[in-house]
Image (cartoon, rainbow, N blue to C red; front, side, top):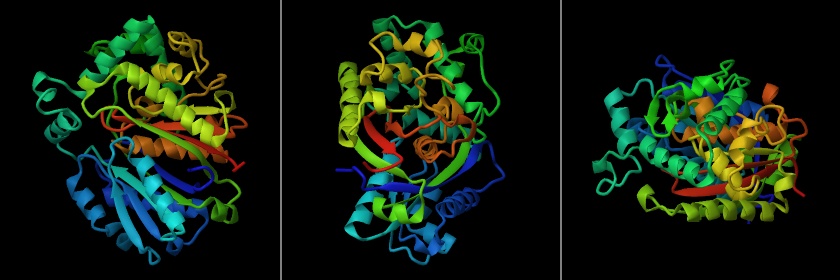
Length: 393
C-alpha cells in the first residue's frame, strides 16, 4: 500500500535546451542544490540517493552506479546509493525504492536526481542507441522498426478504430505546446504552434508528422522525498503520494495486444484512484506521460475521462489546454518540453509536485488538490499510475 507513505518536499530543475558547454555534473550540482534548498533542509540530512539512470551515457551511468554523487556533493549523511533503469518508468521506480528505504528505516530523507546531455553525444551513437534500445534485435530491428515506426503503427491503428482525424491528432500537439509556452523550463517557452504548423510539417512515420515527434534535449531535475509524517514537519506544501497501480504489457511492441493495453491503462489508473479513495471527477490535473502525443487521447479514453472515439474532438475544443476544464500534461509532455531520455518522467513528477504545491507559475491550475500522473517505460512496456495530493485524508 502506498497511501500517505511518501511525500515530495523539494524540487529543482534546469531548463531543457541544448547546452554543449555544460557538463553533466554541472547540471547535477545545480538541480540537487535547488531541490535541497527548496525543501529547506541541510544537505547532510539526506541519507539516501536514488538516481534515474541516464540513457546513452555509459560513462556517467558508471560513475553514478559506483556512488559518485554523494562524494561530489559532500553529502555526509548518506547511508546508501542506487541507480534505477526502467526507461521512462525509471523515476517511478526511484520513488518506490526511496519509499522502501524510508519505511524500512534505512533513510529518513532521499534525494532523487537525473541528468541528460544529448548534445555532446556523437550523432551516430544517438541514432544507434534509439534505433536499437527496446527493439527486438531478431524480430523488429532487421525490418527497420524504430521508435517512430512503432508509434506510427499504434497511432494509425488508434485513428482507424476510433475515427480520430489527422486534425484532431494535430490538436493534441497544439494543446501541449500551449502549456509548454507558459513553462520557462521548456525548449518551446513562448513558442506555441498552430494547427496548420503541425499538419503542414513533413511526414516522418505515417501518420506522425515532424511536429508530432520528439526533439532531443539536454536537461536535469531532482526531488527530495521523505515520509508523510516527516514532511509535515519540514513544509506545509508537500505533495503526498496517495495511490498507485501498475500493469506490464510486453517488451516487444509487435507482440503487444492493444486491447490489453487499453484495459491495462484503465485498470492501473483505477487501482491508483481506488487506493487514494478518489474518482475520476476528483482529479484536477491529468499529468499523462508517454512521450508521443497520440497517446493522450488514447489514455483519456482508456481511463474513462472521455468516451471511446471522442477524445480527439474533446482536445480540439480546448478542454485540455490552459484554462480548459480538464488540464492535461501541464508541462507539455515530451513534445512540449523536449525529450531528455528517461528524464521526461522526472520532469513530469516535478510538474506534478509543483501543481500540488501551488508553485507552477503561469501553468498553475487554480485550486489543484489532486493530480494523476503516469509513467511508461521502454517502447510502452508498462504503465505505472499514481495519484498525488495536498494532504493525506
